[in-house]
Image (tube, rainbow, N blue to C red; front, side, top):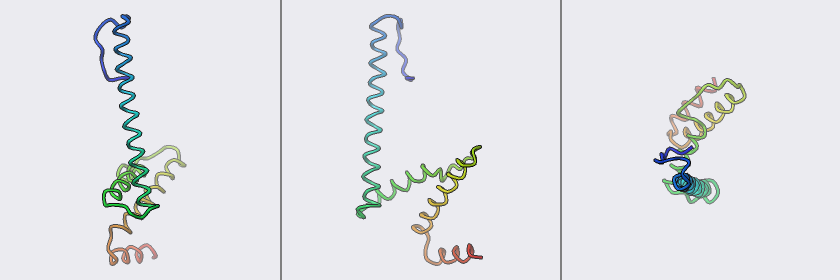
Length: 117
């Protein structure tokens, strides 16, 4: 469904064609944006996890994408227990990555000791 509003008689062939053209253009723009995002994601993930030559921007992009995927900052309760467990597990993996990449050695030691008791 398009958010655009075309004025005129919807049964007029010219008006209908303009509406169809507008929807087509919107879809093309959306498809282009999706393709660009997928390409950027593939490049960033490859540089971080495969090539090992990631820039700060690549790492930031990957971590933001992972946060969105894991719903790290928007925990939601799911009525399906399997789905709920999946999101909990994703958040735990994301949290572990964040801890090992952001916390200093002393804080990591303290967390490790506290979780072993």
